[in-house]
Image 1 (cartoon, rainbow, N blue to C red):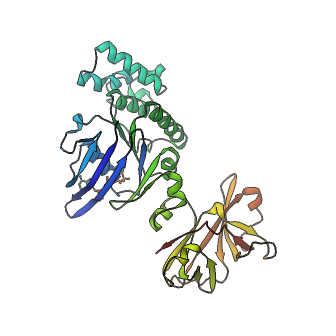
Image 2: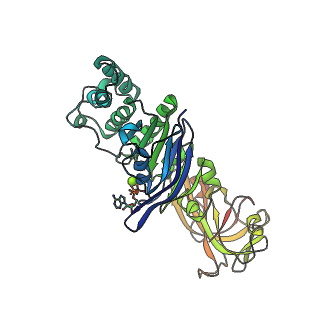
Image 3: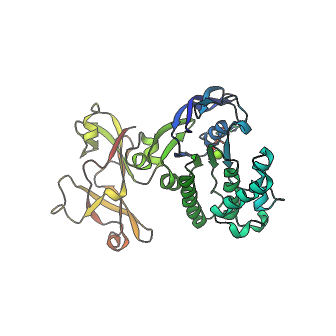
Length: 360
Ligand SMILES: Nc1ncnc2c1ncn2[C@@H]1O[C@H](COP(=O)(O)OP(=O)(O)OP(=O)(O)O)[C@@H](O)[C@H]1O
Ligand SMILES: [Mg+2]
């Protein structure tokens, strides 16, 4: 059984704290994505896991063993980097065979057979004798994946392995990585700053910012119950309304929006209300609109193909930041959205539990 436990990991460069007290536990066979903006510490954390970087303090435990003081080659990790990490003078097969060869895993013919098997698994059976420059970027990353798996690692670490590839290849390859990862059942940490990538392939996602893990949970939980305003903004799209709690409402100037979450906070708390665009319905008139619908005006309409996104301002909302402000977004099928041209007056409603209300 191989799980990973990180305890109180801290890393500073000079006076800059890059990782502040990271604690996490991964289950055997789990795929965890580290997701966060550039510079938040994702690569540093991955390098600490791999043993390329030493934390100032804290522990890395793999498979029940404290590996904090072990060098990378004693940690049974397979790593895939962003790009261009293959040996240019070796064929695909030789690249994959390299690790086992250096470590003396099996006989030469066993190493070759295993490399062929792995290359077939990543869909490159017909390309084993090609050199990296004869392979596309996506194919090179498949070789890199096969090479990482060839040393029979306990943990697979991937640092933005798809970021150099075009959108279509990215989507294809990420689901393939997920398929292979599941098939082998290997515990995996996948670094990305692409939230769609993280949400679509992970068992859990750790959202990081400025050296902290803000939330670590299943993709749907991260999307539906973001732990704080940073996570709510960073994950998914949506409208944000800023206001103050007043009893069981969020007040934006004279507008009072019912909210159970507000009821649990002291009145007068400055909050933001996050509303996903798929939760917002639009109505032509107050008659027929659900109770609690609010008057709004279309400010913008963006065509995305099958869907269109309508941005709305609350009618009568103050414009200053202090008193509260913001936008509501609604996603409609493009056919249904067509008539909501900017300037259209509408009534907007959403299920009462839908908005996430978080302190500012
Ligand atoms: N060897 C180093 N010396 C000094 N500062 C470093 C070093 N390595 C990383 N940093 C700093 O630590 C911070 C975190 O870097 P890290 O590479 O972990 O970020 P990241 O989340 O992987 O970002 P990106 O998405 O851009 O790859 C950055 O501010 C970076 O400048
Ligand atoms: Mg990085």
